[in-house]
Amino acid sequence: DAGVTQSPTHLIKTRGQQVTLRCSPKSGHDTVSWYQQALGQGPQFIFQYYEEEERQRGNFPDRFSGHQFPNYSSELNVNALLLGDSALYLCASSPRQGAGGELFFGEGSRLTVL
Amino acid sequence: GDSVTQMEGPVTLSEEAFLTINCTYTATGYPSLFWYVQYPGEGLQLLLKATKADDKGSNKGFEATYRKETTSFHLEKGSVQVSDSAVYFCALIYNQGGKLIFGQGTELSVKP
Image (cartoon, rainbow over all chains, first blue to last red; front, side):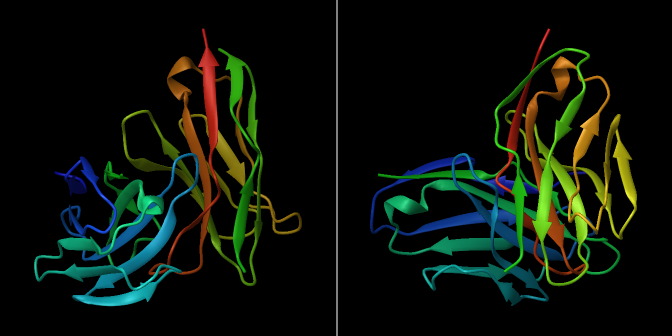
């Protein structure tokens, strides 16, 4: 049973560019959340998708947007990249019901903005 | 707002030493509490959880008790191993579909 898979694992962009990160949830999971983890910090919640809609959002600007597809996979898009967007981006999945708060995380996509 | 505070690392211990990593939280309601662990090169994984006051979560020799009176959820292990070297995150969540609020993480290094 594949867990949460993310791609790409590493990428380098320059300021002002746009980036798209992808996530496939664990089999049987229909809810996907995205987190940003800056170096030496705990993950910060970006947003959560369920039934192809954004259900909750953290304190991130509109430059951060997302999408969920009918197969529950998800994308995170960041426009007009800033140096401060350099971080590990984590995708987490869970079933909508019965998770008890437990999330399953992917290994992350490490974004470096130069 | 809600928040989680962990003791600062890195924590360096010898093998078989006793481990405590302190975690306190600020919350307006009654969250569930978690410890997640991040091994080098791997994703975050759930270590243990407790969903209500006085519950004790345990896994792989690690334990933590949900203390509402002190708003704490300290992680303990009686005898650490080199393989326990990782970054440990304390976190809270209010409902099954909610967002996790993480502490800043505590790096543990266990020397043989």
